[in-house]
Image 1 (cartoon, rainbow, N blue to C red):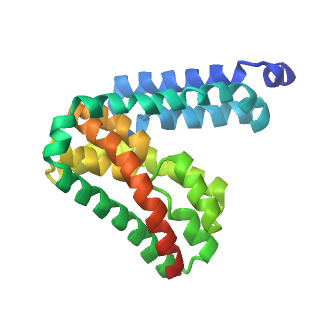
Image 2: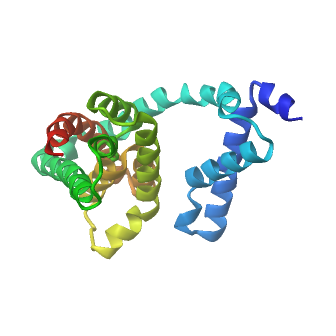
Length: 230
């Protein structure tokens, strides 16, 4: 049975989709942030692989086909931004200041915690790209001498956690401006957070999409500078 599952071309795709659908059903039924579909799917896949003793490579042979959809999905994020182009132009200065502030806060917080907990340079640079999309973060981590596999994990955890708490944080600090919400979510929680921003509204989704790209580019430069601090 285990060998049959491991050899199945679509095993990885199937359990990934099932896990995500389970998460959607739980989120719809209970309305709790902890039942984030992506988080549930990650846990579900891990449990299935452990239960049936299927190694990751066998799982990824099928699941990798889902990765092919990431590029067109990312490109599609430009559509809501295009629809809000006039709003972007009229608030360009505030948006750029917000994104730059978010990137500096992210890098600065990692530096502070690294000093407090006596992280090595390798551990420090591993965490620096935590708030940018995986594709860019992997390159930054590798270039700075970090541990790429851990960087990927940290980026995913950051995105999922940001997706879960984004709405509550906005309510807690009484952030009501859609542009501010979108910029904050996209800068801190990249694409996974942007999924939540799109649920909150069209403007939030558009600004979050913009923040992903701009924050990623700024972080490439900022991380190279901050890497020299420790």
